[in-house]
Image (cartoon, rainbow, N blue to C red; front, side, top):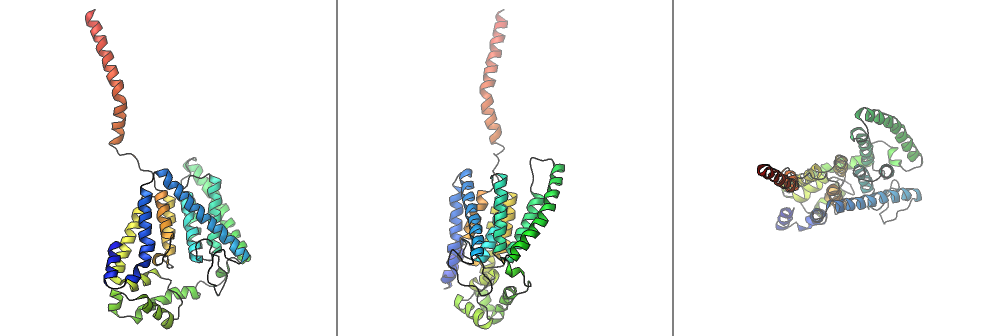
Length: 349
């Protein structure tokens, strides 16, 4: 990341590195701070982050009821969309769906986890972020199918999961109908191929207005936005690949993508299974919007959650025998001394 910042500054596009510093450099420092903390303290920070996301989903629900937002946000033309504490409807949906997997990795009581997951699922639904809601539904199904219920035998676990699945499907259908009837999911009434979907497809035509040299070296953000607004008649760019390619240039964008992929893969590799699922939901949802290419704190939140719910490391193989040996040495010495004394007495007799 630092090499990319230096490169963009050297080629005269230092204005393009703002989100790299504010999003990824800050997230990196947060990771370093987390690694200095004991495991229990990391979990506490993860629990606090999840509590914030749950509170955001609750606030978003009441925003949908009151048709008014707690935080300022520019008006949207089609339907009212709550934002909670995240600052954007898509972020509310993506983070609510993401947090479901991490809640399953907590040590909270079962009823607290179930209530939190239900709250986050409703938050993903009322955000009207369709991709996030679909991902949240799949996430719930995968958690049910593949999460181990340790207190049950495998045979009993399969039966219990089957019963829960039979109950969960109609309950989710009823919840969807209720939210739809209450007017909280207006964007689900229309077809999938609406203006929002077409904007995500049309944006890739931006490459037709730039030469190969500009695509390889990148352009200024003002030049890019002029083409998007005037030529394509779009207000925003909701595509991370387009932003990265046109701001950094194709080679630098590929380097950035590989570095980000390696960072995420290392963080995900050591996390609990349900946390890995939550991280995968975050990545898929973020690829459909600008999360990876804007100044945001959600990347820092994901890094904190992945470090908070890592699987505890087992002691090294060389450590356990040493510890055991150190405990057994005094007993062995005492036993040897007693044996020597008995032999001496026998010899005297």
